[in-house]
Amino acid sequence: MKKFYVIGHPVAHSLSPKIHAMFAAQCGEEIDYQSIDFEPGCFIDSLGRLRREQNPYGANVTVPFKRDAADYCTELTERARVAGAVNTITFSGNQVFGDNTDGAGFVHDVCARCGFDFVGKRVLMLGAGGAARGVIAAIRPLGCARITVANRTESRAVSLAEEMGIHAAAFTDLGRGYDIVINATSAGLSGAAPAVPNTIFSDAQLAYDLVYAQYSTPFMRLARESGCPRVEDGLGMLIEQAAESFKVWLGVAPDTAPVYMALRAAAEKA
Ligand code: NAP
Image 1 (cartoon, rainbow, N blue to C red):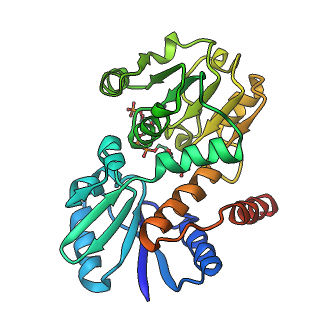
Image 2: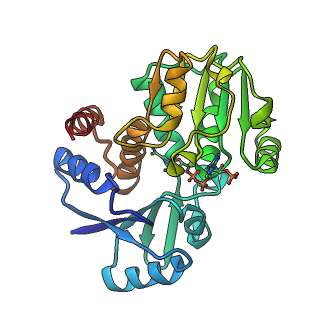
């Protein structure tokens, strides 16, 4: 049976094993998919040991190891190279192929499930880490009127904007004028929304937090309280990026809609 892992720290809470088990059952594939926690700073040694002992077919990589994974791989897809981060690894002998399915997962969820069309839209991206890079690379070709990136550490937003040919702004200079506001910061992990003015939501049709949490995140609460008509968390993106990884590994595209409905219902019941 092909073995897969999701590698992170912490990772025990990850929904990925459940999502991939649902995909496998739906597609008639037999896979063994488990989560594994690596100590920060030991990614290369831990992955070497896992490969020797378990001979995995593939792995998903999550916070905080996506950049380590990109350095580890012997070959990267274009979207992983642009993102500078890998969330999907395929092992083949001595070769290690790295891909990044986050951007495709985000676009699929926002366009297909949320019904948002990026053509002519003004996009505000909060955050300049690996997830922001992957998402910007995926939405750049979709005909947006303008993409602006803002980050707590302003210099990272400026260099990302230069690299990707988009605009940069400081958190404190932000105001109205965005159709969609995307939160790709991990600020919520410390229980707060990023320190941005609530006028960023004045013209927004959609506020989307990449983070999935059982309850509304601080960013989602701020968007709602500021009058944003539609507010979404990252559950849909999580399922879509997993479906894209599943397709990379096994060549089959699972139907994500029933998985989304089941996991959303389970979260509401909990
Ligand atoms: P990352 O590379 O570590 O980047 C973290 C980003 O958050 C940086 O821009 C950082 O700003 C910013 N940040 C951290 N704490 C902050 C705070 N208190 N206030 C404002 N900004 C803060 O992480 P990543 O891989 O990009 O992931 C970002 C988030 O997206 C994570 O929470 C992750 O779980 C989520 N995500 C979800 C999915 C999904 O499928 N739903 C997929 C990928 C990622 P500085 O540069 O100033 O440090």
